[in-house]
Image 1 (tube, rainbow, N blue to C red):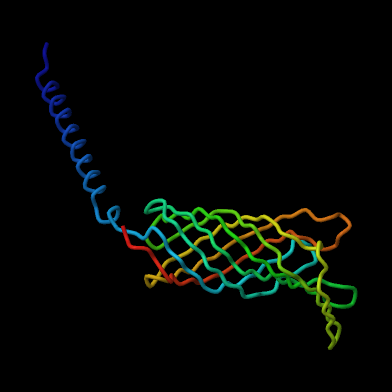
Image 2: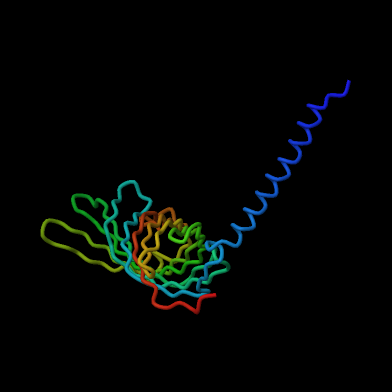
Length: 217
């Protein structure tokens, strides 16, 4: 026997599902045309500022000390949510280590050249992932004993250029300021007979100001 109630219920369910689906599509279209995805952005940005470093050698007996560096970077936006970053950073590295009954310290200076992929998941938050080429400039060894210090520059070949990687998270505020934290590490093979190492890892804190931006698009 034909059941009219079941037939009406099936027709009603089909029509309701179709209406809901159309409503979802309309919402999706409205979202795509919303103000968030339509916001303009600058294709190029130039920014710089100070950077605090706490980078240690990969030695079990060494302890990092704070140093202050600086950077100037250029960002090219591939899209509203992604870009490429390069530039140069002055990165001093300093750490202490025991030397018999004295305290030793390495002071090393590098120029770091980055190539980052920067992702902008929101208007305020940025995430960076990428590589570094660390150009070694010079280094000294300081040995402290009681009230005296002995400073000796390192000869060429002890420390050298190295490659590394960086992971960064940052926050944009007040239109042109950006604060961030880095975790970075670098590796370079050293002779087995050498006590000094080119390998390092550590944290960096920075604050930058955008000096220039191209016209928004």
